[in-house]
Length: 240
Image (spheres, rainbow, N blue to C red):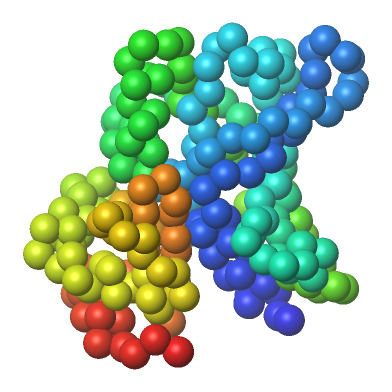
Protein backbone atom coordinates (compact mmCIF):
# COMPACT_ATOMS: atom_id res chain seq x y z
CA UNK A 1 0.00 0.00 0.00
CA UNK A 2 1.29 3.48 -0.85
CA UNK A 3 2.09 5.96 1.92
CA UNK A 4 -0.69 8.25 0.69
CA UNK A 5 -3.31 5.49 0.73
CA UNK A 6 -2.15 4.26 4.13
CA UNK A 7 -2.32 7.77 5.59
CA UNK A 8 -5.87 8.14 4.29
CA UNK A 9 -6.85 4.83 5.91
CA UNK A 10 -5.25 5.91 9.17
CA UNK A 11 -7.14 9.21 9.16
CA UNK A 12 -10.40 7.42 8.38
CA UNK A 13 -9.91 4.95 11.22
CA UNK A 14 -9.15 7.79 13.62
CA UNK A 15 -12.27 9.65 12.45
CA UNK A 16 -14.44 6.52 12.56
CA UNK A 17 -13.52 5.41 16.05
CA UNK A 18 -14.81 7.40 19.00
CA UNK A 19 -12.95 5.81 21.89
CA UNK A 20 -9.47 4.48 22.47
CA UNK A 21 -6.80 3.53 24.98
CA UNK A 22 -4.98 6.56 26.35
CA UNK A 23 -1.50 5.77 27.68
CA UNK A 24 0.04 8.32 30.03
CA UNK A 25 3.24 8.27 32.09
CA UNK A 26 2.43 7.34 35.66
CA UNK A 27 3.33 9.69 38.49
CA UNK A 28 2.62 7.02 41.10
CA UNK A 29 4.72 4.26 39.54
CA UNK A 30 7.51 6.29 38.03
CA UNK A 31 8.44 5.47 34.47
CA UNK A 32 5.58 3.07 33.81
CA UNK A 33 2.78 3.60 31.27
CA UNK A 34 -0.76 3.89 32.61
CA UNK A 35 -3.63 2.93 30.30
CA UNK A 36 -7.21 4.14 30.44
CA UNK A 37 -10.17 4.16 28.06
CA UNK A 38 -11.43 7.54 26.85
CA UNK A 39 -14.01 8.76 24.32
CA UNK A 40 -12.83 11.37 21.84
CA UNK A 41 -13.77 13.31 18.74
CA UNK A 42 -11.60 15.30 16.36
CA UNK A 43 -11.22 19.07 16.39
CA UNK A 44 -11.13 21.39 13.39
CA UNK A 45 -7.47 20.39 12.74
CA UNK A 46 -8.18 16.64 13.08
CA UNK A 47 -6.56 16.37 16.51
CA UNK A 48 -8.20 13.99 19.01
CA UNK A 49 -9.96 15.88 21.79
CA UNK A 50 -10.76 14.31 25.17
CA UNK A 51 -12.76 15.56 28.15
CA UNK A 52 -11.16 14.39 31.38
CA UNK A 53 -11.73 15.01 35.09
CA UNK A 54 -9.08 16.75 37.15
CA UNK A 55 -9.18 13.97 39.77
CA UNK A 56 -8.69 11.17 37.21
CA UNK A 57 -5.34 9.39 37.30
CA UNK A 58 -4.65 10.13 33.63
CA UNK A 59 -5.25 13.84 34.26
CA UNK A 60 -2.72 13.84 37.09
CA UNK A 61 -0.25 12.08 34.82
CA UNK A 62 -0.79 14.56 31.96
CA UNK A 63 -0.24 17.53 34.26
CA UNK A 64 3.11 16.00 35.21
CA UNK A 65 4.15 14.95 31.68
CA UNK A 66 2.15 15.84 28.56
CA UNK A 67 3.54 12.97 26.46
CA UNK A 68 0.82 10.41 25.68
CA UNK A 69 -0.31 7.89 23.12
CA UNK A 70 -3.83 7.11 21.98
CA UNK A 71 -4.45 3.69 20.43
CA UNK A 72 -7.63 3.18 18.42
CA UNK A 73 -9.00 0.16 16.59
CA UNK A 74 -12.31 -1.19 15.36
CA UNK A 75 -13.67 -3.23 18.24
CA UNK A 76 -16.35 -4.72 15.99
CA UNK A 77 -14.04 -6.81 13.80
CA UNK A 78 -13.62 -10.54 14.29
CA UNK A 79 -9.81 -10.61 14.14
CA UNK A 80 -8.02 -7.66 15.73
CA UNK A 81 -4.55 -8.77 14.66
CA UNK A 82 -5.39 -8.55 10.95
CA UNK A 83 -7.41 -5.32 11.06
CA UNK A 84 -6.34 -1.68 11.15
CA UNK A 85 -5.17 0.18 14.24
CA UNK A 86 -3.60 3.53 14.94
CA UNK A 87 -1.19 4.51 17.71
CA UNK A 88 -1.15 8.29 17.93
CA UNK A 89 1.81 9.69 19.90
CA UNK A 90 1.79 13.31 20.93
CA UNK A 91 1.45 16.00 23.57
CA UNK A 92 -1.83 16.30 25.46
CA UNK A 93 -2.56 19.88 26.48
CA UNK A 94 -5.52 21.53 28.14
CA UNK A 95 -7.41 23.94 25.88
CA UNK A 96 -7.51 27.53 27.08
CA UNK A 97 -10.75 29.56 27.00
CA UNK A 98 -11.38 31.08 23.60
CA UNK A 99 -12.85 30.38 20.15
CA UNK A 100 -11.05 27.03 19.74
CA UNK A 101 -12.43 25.73 23.03
CA UNK A 102 -15.92 27.02 22.20
CA UNK A 103 -15.80 25.18 18.88
CA UNK A 104 -14.52 21.99 20.52
CA UNK A 105 -17.24 22.06 23.17
CA UNK A 106 -20.01 22.39 20.60
CA UNK A 107 -18.64 19.58 18.41
CA UNK A 108 -17.84 17.23 21.32
CA UNK A 109 -21.31 17.58 22.84
CA UNK A 110 -22.94 16.71 19.52
CA UNK A 111 -21.01 13.44 19.63
CA UNK A 112 -21.45 12.84 23.37
CA UNK A 113 -24.47 14.81 24.65
CA UNK A 114 -24.47 12.86 27.91
CA UNK A 115 -21.10 14.48 28.72
CA UNK A 116 -22.78 17.87 29.15
CA UNK A 117 -23.73 16.81 32.66
CA UNK A 118 -20.09 16.06 33.50
CA UNK A 119 -19.04 19.45 32.22
CA UNK A 120 -21.67 21.23 34.32
CA UNK A 121 -21.30 19.39 37.61
CA UNK A 122 -17.69 18.20 37.82
CA UNK A 123 -14.22 19.58 37.26
CA UNK A 124 -13.68 18.31 33.71
CA UNK A 125 -11.50 19.99 31.09
CA UNK A 126 -10.99 19.59 27.35
CA UNK A 127 -7.56 18.50 26.14
CA UNK A 128 -6.26 18.17 22.57
CA UNK A 129 -3.52 15.75 21.52
CA UNK A 130 -1.09 17.28 19.05
CA UNK A 131 0.74 14.52 17.16
CA UNK A 132 4.46 13.86 17.30
CA UNK A 133 4.34 10.70 15.17
CA UNK A 134 1.62 8.23 14.22
CA UNK A 135 1.96 4.50 13.63
CA UNK A 136 -0.60 2.72 11.47
CA UNK A 137 -0.94 -1.01 10.97
CA UNK A 138 -3.36 -1.84 8.18
CA UNK A 139 -2.95 -5.59 8.52
CA UNK A 140 -0.22 -8.22 8.73
CA UNK A 141 3.01 -6.68 7.43
CA UNK A 142 1.30 -3.43 6.41
CA UNK A 143 3.07 -1.05 8.82
CA UNK A 144 3.66 2.68 8.45
CA UNK A 145 4.98 5.65 10.44
CA UNK A 146 3.56 9.09 9.64
CA UNK A 147 4.69 12.58 10.48
CA UNK A 148 2.06 15.06 11.76
CA UNK A 149 1.38 16.66 8.38
CA UNK A 150 -0.06 13.36 7.11
CA UNK A 151 -2.69 13.35 9.87
CA UNK A 152 -3.48 17.02 10.42
CA UNK A 153 -5.83 17.54 7.49
CA UNK A 154 -7.89 20.59 8.38
CA UNK A 155 -11.67 20.45 8.19
CA UNK A 156 -12.67 22.73 5.25
CA UNK A 157 -15.87 23.69 7.09
CA UNK A 158 -15.74 26.12 9.98
CA UNK A 159 -18.01 25.76 12.99
CA UNK A 160 -20.89 27.72 11.45
CA UNK A 161 -20.75 25.84 8.14
CA UNK A 162 -20.60 22.45 9.82
CA UNK A 163 -23.47 23.40 12.13
CA UNK A 164 -25.51 24.40 9.07
CA UNK A 165 -24.85 21.06 7.36
CA UNK A 166 -25.68 19.08 10.48
CA UNK A 167 -28.86 21.01 11.32
CA UNK A 168 -30.12 20.94 7.72
CA UNK A 169 -29.59 17.21 7.27
CA UNK A 170 -31.17 16.30 10.60
CA UNK A 171 -34.16 18.62 10.16
CA UNK A 172 -34.92 18.16 6.46
CA UNK A 173 -33.27 14.90 5.38
CA UNK A 174 -33.70 12.44 8.24
CA UNK A 175 -34.45 9.62 5.79
CA UNK A 176 -31.16 10.25 4.01
CA UNK A 177 -29.25 10.15 7.31
CA UNK A 178 -30.92 6.82 8.11
CA UNK A 179 -30.02 5.58 4.62
CA UNK A 180 -26.36 6.50 5.17
CA UNK A 181 -26.27 3.98 8.02
CA UNK A 182 -27.31 1.18 5.66
CA UNK A 183 -24.45 2.12 3.31
CA UNK A 184 -21.95 1.16 6.02
CA UNK A 185 -23.88 -1.95 7.01
CA UNK A 186 -25.33 -0.61 10.25
CA UNK A 187 -28.89 -1.51 11.19
CA UNK A 188 -30.70 1.30 12.99
CA UNK A 189 -32.27 -0.07 16.21
CA UNK A 190 -36.00 0.39 16.74
CA UNK A 191 -36.78 3.68 18.45
CA UNK A 192 -33.42 5.25 17.58
CA UNK A 193 -33.21 8.31 15.33
CA UNK A 194 -29.81 8.59 13.59
CA UNK A 195 -28.37 12.10 13.83
CA UNK A 196 -25.60 13.59 11.76
CA UNK A 197 -23.11 15.01 14.26
CA UNK A 198 -20.00 15.81 12.25
CA UNK A 199 -18.92 16.64 8.73
CA UNK A 200 -15.42 17.14 7.33
CA UNK A 201 -13.89 17.00 3.88
CA UNK A 202 -13.51 13.22 3.95
CA UNK A 203 -16.78 12.01 5.46
CA UNK A 204 -19.59 12.36 7.98
CA UNK A 205 -20.21 10.94 11.44
CA UNK A 206 -23.64 9.80 12.60
CA UNK A 207 -24.76 9.14 16.19
CA UNK A 208 -27.13 6.29 16.96
CA UNK A 209 -27.93 6.69 20.65
CA UNK A 210 -24.43 6.21 22.14
CA UNK A 211 -22.78 4.72 19.08
CA UNK A 212 -20.97 6.73 16.40
CA UNK A 213 -20.65 5.46 12.81
CA UNK A 214 -18.59 6.89 9.97
CA UNK A 215 -19.49 7.20 6.29
CA UNK A 216 -16.41 8.05 4.23
CA UNK A 217 -16.68 9.99 0.98
CA UNK A 218 -15.36 8.52 -2.26
CA UNK A 219 -13.49 11.76 -2.95
CA UNK A 220 -12.70 14.82 -0.81
CA UNK A 221 -15.37 17.53 -0.57
CA UNK A 222 -13.64 20.85 -0.11
CA UNK A 223 -16.59 23.27 -0.10
CA UNK A 224 -20.33 23.41 0.56
CA UNK A 225 -21.28 22.76 -3.06
CA UNK A 226 -19.11 19.64 -3.17
CA UNK A 227 -20.40 18.26 0.13
CA UNK A 228 -23.99 18.90 -0.93
CA UNK A 229 -23.46 16.99 -4.19
CA UNK A 230 -21.74 14.18 -2.30
CA UNK A 231 -24.54 13.83 0.26
CA UNK A 232 -27.19 13.87 -2.47
CA UNK A 233 -25.33 11.16 -4.37
CA UNK A 234 -24.97 9.02 -1.26
CA UNK A 235 -28.68 9.38 -0.51
CA UNK A 236 -29.41 7.82 -3.91
CA UNK A 237 -26.88 5.01 -3.65
CA UNK A 238 -28.05 1.47 -3.08
CA UNK A 239 -26.41 -0.52 -0.25
CA UNK A 240 -23.75 -2.96 -1.42
